[in-house]
Length: 166
Image (cartoon, rainbow, N blue to C red; front, side):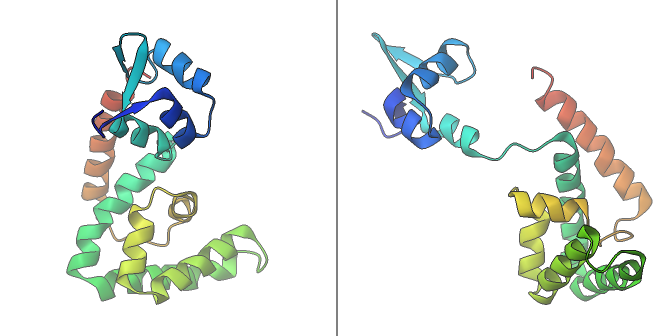
């Protein structure tokens, strides 16, 4: 059998669910499969999509905005990181020292201290920690207003198109 196609048993192991659950997902059309006789085969790429963390509307919107920051970060790394550091410095006094907002700001300080590559990892990461940090981003003011509006408009079109059937 071609490596691109997996059995329901292989898929169930990868997803950590029962084989019957995989069969049910296929029968409901939630997981695309091909039937060979009575056996179902699922593309590996389809399973990879299921393994990706799924982002909420707000998380994905934040991801789009932060991806837009990448160009600015690549052109002027010091300026962008200084803006973030200034924001952190000015926001810290407004929050309780033991509060969550302060913890997020401290995490951002560590990421920024790690350098541009660490910042890029958080700006584009789809993991839970990156998503949480982006919801508490110190990069306010980096994107000009018109660019921010364009990104949000593009995001809305993307979201409406990609999630219309959902």
